[in-house]
Length: 124
Length: 112
Image (cartoon, rainbow over all chains, first blue to last red; front, side):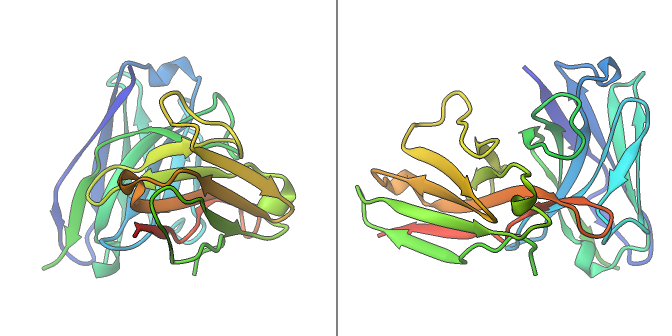
Protein backbone atom coordinates (compact mmCIF):
# COMPACT_ATOMS: atom_id res chain seq x y z
CA UNK A 1 0.00 0.00 0.00
CA UNK A 2 1.48 3.28 -1.11
CA UNK A 3 1.67 6.01 1.50
CA UNK A 4 2.87 9.59 1.23
CA UNK A 5 3.76 11.91 4.11
CA UNK A 6 4.47 15.62 3.91
CA UNK A 7 6.87 17.31 6.28
CA UNK A 8 8.31 20.76 6.77
CA UNK A 9 7.90 24.02 8.67
CA UNK A 10 4.36 25.05 9.45
CA UNK A 11 5.22 28.74 9.56
CA UNK A 12 7.12 30.76 6.96
CA UNK A 13 7.78 34.48 6.95
CA UNK A 14 6.65 36.64 4.04
CA UNK A 15 9.20 36.94 1.21
CA UNK A 16 10.98 33.78 2.35
CA UNK A 17 11.01 30.34 0.75
CA UNK A 18 8.59 27.58 1.67
CA UNK A 19 10.20 24.14 1.69
CA UNK A 20 8.35 20.84 2.04
CA UNK A 21 9.31 17.20 1.59
CA UNK A 22 7.15 14.23 0.70
CA UNK A 23 8.35 10.83 1.85
CA UNK A 24 7.01 7.87 -0.08
CA UNK A 25 6.60 4.36 1.28
CA UNK A 26 5.24 1.28 -0.41
CA UNK A 27 6.47 2.37 -3.83
CA UNK A 28 9.79 3.37 -5.31
CA UNK A 29 10.12 6.75 -7.01
CA UNK A 30 13.18 5.43 -8.84
CA UNK A 31 11.11 2.71 -10.55
CA UNK A 32 10.04 5.43 -12.98
CA UNK A 33 6.47 4.16 -13.11
CA UNK A 34 4.63 7.25 -11.92
CA UNK A 35 4.78 11.03 -11.74
CA UNK A 36 4.70 12.68 -8.33
CA UNK A 37 2.75 15.86 -7.56
CA UNK A 38 2.25 18.78 -5.22
CA UNK A 39 -1.23 20.27 -4.73
CA UNK A 40 -2.42 22.94 -2.33
CA UNK A 41 -5.68 24.17 -0.83
CA UNK A 42 -6.17 27.47 1.00
CA UNK A 43 -8.58 27.30 3.89
CA UNK A 44 -12.15 27.28 2.66
CA UNK A 45 -11.09 27.32 -0.99
CA UNK A 46 -10.52 24.90 -3.83
CA UNK A 47 -7.63 22.74 -4.93
CA UNK A 48 -4.70 24.03 -7.00
CA UNK A 49 -2.16 21.83 -8.75
CA UNK A 50 1.37 23.14 -8.18
CA UNK A 51 3.51 20.80 -10.25
CA UNK A 52 4.97 17.35 -10.77
CA UNK A 53 8.26 15.53 -11.04
CA UNK A 54 9.46 12.29 -12.57
CA UNK A 55 12.21 10.04 -11.28
CA UNK A 56 14.58 11.44 -13.90
CA UNK A 57 14.11 14.90 -12.42
CA UNK A 58 11.99 16.25 -15.25
CA UNK A 59 9.31 18.62 -14.02
CA UNK A 60 6.16 20.42 -15.07
CA UNK A 61 4.68 23.35 -13.21
CA UNK A 62 1.44 25.29 -13.01
CA UNK A 63 2.10 28.32 -15.25
CA UNK A 64 0.68 30.64 -12.58
CA UNK A 65 3.35 29.54 -10.09
CA UNK A 66 6.18 28.57 -12.43
CA UNK A 67 8.38 31.57 -11.69
CA UNK A 68 8.47 30.75 -7.97
CA UNK A 69 8.33 26.94 -7.84
CA UNK A 70 10.99 24.26 -7.87
CA UNK A 71 10.32 20.56 -7.34
CA UNK A 72 13.21 18.16 -6.86
CA UNK A 73 13.61 14.46 -6.20
CA UNK A 74 15.95 12.39 -4.04
CA UNK A 75 15.53 8.82 -5.16
CA UNK A 76 18.04 7.56 -2.57
CA UNK A 77 15.67 8.71 0.17
CA UNK A 78 12.50 8.00 -1.83
CA UNK A 79 11.48 11.62 -1.36
CA UNK A 80 10.51 14.58 -3.48
CA UNK A 81 10.48 18.18 -2.39
CA UNK A 82 8.79 21.50 -3.04
CA UNK A 83 10.32 24.94 -2.83
CA UNK A 84 8.14 28.02 -3.28
CA UNK A 85 9.96 31.33 -3.15
CA UNK A 86 8.88 34.87 -2.29
CA UNK A 87 5.85 33.68 -0.37
CA UNK A 88 2.99 35.93 0.70
CA UNK A 89 -0.10 35.40 2.80
CA UNK A 90 -1.82 34.13 -0.34
CA UNK A 91 0.42 31.07 -0.20
CA UNK A 92 -1.04 30.03 3.16
CA UNK A 93 -2.63 26.66 2.51
CA UNK A 94 -2.69 22.96 3.20
CA UNK A 95 -0.08 21.42 0.93
CA UNK A 96 -0.59 17.86 -0.30
CA UNK A 97 1.71 15.52 -2.14
CA UNK A 98 0.13 12.90 -4.36
CA UNK A 99 1.06 10.18 -6.79
CA UNK A 100 -0.37 9.93 -10.27
CA UNK A 101 -3.03 7.30 -10.73
CA UNK A 102 -1.97 6.08 -14.15
CA UNK A 103 1.61 5.07 -14.96
CA UNK A 104 3.89 7.22 -17.09
CA UNK A 105 1.27 9.73 -18.21
CA UNK A 106 2.41 13.28 -17.49
CA UNK A 107 -0.68 15.14 -18.69
CA UNK A 108 -3.95 13.21 -18.74
CA UNK A 109 -3.91 11.78 -15.24
CA UNK A 110 -5.51 11.80 -11.84
CA UNK A 111 -4.14 11.95 -8.28
CA UNK A 112 -4.22 8.87 -6.12
CA UNK A 113 -3.11 8.32 -3.42
CA UNK A 114 -2.64 11.56 -1.48
CA UNK A 115 -0.65 12.42 1.60
CA UNK A 116 -2.41 13.68 4.71
CA UNK A 117 -1.47 17.26 3.96
CA UNK A 118 0.43 19.83 5.95
CA UNK A 119 -0.69 23.33 6.82
CA UNK A 120 1.77 26.07 5.97
CA UNK A 121 1.04 29.55 7.27
CA UNK A 122 2.81 32.58 5.87
CA UNK A 123 3.04 35.21 8.56
CA UNK A 124 5.59 37.43 10.23
CA UNK B 1 -11.53 31.90 -11.48
CA UNK B 2 -11.25 28.17 -12.22
CA UNK B 3 -10.78 26.93 -15.75
CA UNK B 4 -13.38 24.27 -15.03
CA UNK B 5 -16.73 25.66 -13.85
CA UNK B 6 -18.80 23.90 -11.21
CA UNK B 7 -21.93 25.12 -9.42
CA UNK B 8 -20.97 26.36 -5.95
CA UNK B 9 -23.69 24.29 -4.34
CA UNK B 10 -26.30 21.64 -5.01
CA UNK B 11 -28.76 19.99 -2.69
CA UNK B 12 -31.13 17.07 -2.57
CA UNK B 13 -33.24 15.04 -0.23
CA UNK B 14 -32.27 11.57 0.92
CA UNK B 15 -33.00 9.00 -1.76
CA UNK B 16 -33.01 11.54 -4.57
CA UNK B 17 -30.65 11.83 -7.53
CA UNK B 18 -28.40 14.83 -7.90
CA UNK B 19 -25.92 15.82 -10.57
CA UNK B 20 -22.92 18.09 -10.41
CA UNK B 21 -21.73 19.63 -13.65
CA UNK B 22 -18.19 20.50 -14.68
CA UNK B 23 -18.01 22.81 -17.68
CA UNK B 24 -14.81 23.39 -19.61
CA UNK B 25 -13.88 24.33 -23.16
CA UNK B 26 -11.94 23.11 -26.18
CA UNK B 27 -8.64 23.54 -24.36
CA UNK B 28 -9.45 20.96 -21.72
CA UNK B 29 -12.49 18.66 -21.60
CA UNK B 30 -13.34 19.37 -25.23
CA UNK B 31 -9.78 18.49 -26.23
CA UNK B 32 -10.63 14.91 -25.17
CA UNK B 33 -8.76 15.04 -21.88
CA UNK B 34 -10.27 12.85 -19.20
CA UNK B 35 -12.24 14.20 -16.24
CA UNK B 36 -11.75 12.93 -12.71
CA UNK B 37 -13.79 13.57 -9.58
CA UNK B 38 -12.85 13.84 -5.92
CA UNK B 39 -14.91 13.86 -2.73
CA UNK B 40 -13.71 15.84 0.28
CA UNK B 41 -15.20 15.99 3.75
CA UNK B 42 -14.30 18.95 5.98
CA UNK B 43 -10.79 18.69 7.33
CA UNK B 44 -9.95 15.55 5.37
CA UNK B 45 -7.91 14.58 2.35
CA UNK B 46 -9.62 14.58 -1.05
CA UNK B 47 -10.60 11.08 -2.10
CA UNK B 48 -10.67 9.88 -5.70
CA UNK B 49 -14.27 9.14 -6.60
CA UNK B 50 -14.29 8.74 -10.40
CA UNK B 51 -11.32 8.48 -12.75
CA UNK B 52 -11.10 8.72 -16.52
CA UNK B 53 -14.65 10.02 -16.89
CA UNK B 54 -16.62 6.96 -15.86
CA UNK B 55 -14.52 4.60 -13.75
CA UNK B 56 -15.00 3.97 -10.03
CA UNK B 57 -12.05 2.95 -7.85
CA UNK B 58 -12.53 -0.12 -5.74
CA UNK B 59 -14.73 0.62 -2.75
CA UNK B 60 -16.69 3.51 -4.27
CA UNK B 61 -20.40 2.68 -4.27
CA UNK B 62 -22.11 2.35 -7.64
CA UNK B 63 -24.46 5.15 -6.56
CA UNK B 64 -21.72 7.41 -7.90
CA UNK B 65 -21.29 7.65 -11.67
CA UNK B 66 -19.53 9.93 -14.09
CA UNK B 67 -20.15 10.97 -17.66
CA UNK B 68 -18.60 13.27 -20.22
CA UNK B 69 -19.89 14.89 -23.39
CA UNK B 70 -18.32 17.59 -25.50
CA UNK B 71 -16.88 20.27 -23.26
CA UNK B 72 -18.66 19.16 -20.08
CA UNK B 73 -18.73 16.34 -17.59
CA UNK B 74 -21.12 15.35 -14.84
CA UNK B 75 -21.08 13.47 -11.58
CA UNK B 76 -24.35 11.78 -10.66
CA UNK B 77 -25.25 10.52 -7.22
CA UNK B 78 -28.33 8.34 -6.89
CA UNK B 79 -30.04 7.22 -3.71
CA UNK B 80 -28.64 10.24 -1.91
CA UNK B 81 -27.51 9.58 1.66
CA UNK B 82 -26.69 11.95 4.50
CA UNK B 83 -23.10 10.71 4.42
CA UNK B 84 -22.71 12.03 0.87
CA UNK B 85 -22.71 15.60 2.14
CA UNK B 86 -19.28 16.86 1.14
CA UNK B 87 -17.38 18.98 -1.36
CA UNK B 88 -16.87 17.57 -4.84
CA UNK B 89 -14.16 18.63 -7.30
CA UNK B 90 -13.65 17.83 -10.95
CA UNK B 91 -10.16 17.77 -12.48
CA UNK B 92 -8.73 17.58 -15.99
CA UNK B 93 -5.85 18.87 -18.11
CA UNK B 94 -5.77 22.22 -19.89
CA UNK B 95 -3.70 23.05 -22.95
CA UNK B 96 -3.76 26.80 -22.60
CA UNK B 97 -0.60 28.67 -21.65
CA UNK B 98 1.99 25.95 -21.17
CA UNK B 99 -0.47 23.31 -20.15
CA UNK B 100 -1.55 22.44 -16.65
CA UNK B 101 -3.63 20.05 -14.65
CA UNK B 102 -6.66 21.97 -13.48
CA UNK B 103 -9.43 21.63 -10.92
CA UNK B 104 -12.95 22.94 -10.85
CA UNK B 105 -13.85 25.36 -8.09
CA UNK B 106 -15.70 22.70 -6.15
CA UNK B 107 -19.36 22.04 -5.34
CA UNK B 108 -20.81 21.78 -1.87
CA UNK B 109 -23.45 19.04 -1.73
CA UNK B 110 -26.03 19.47 0.99
CA UNK B 111 -28.35 16.61 1.88
CA UNK B 112 -31.60 18.16 3.07
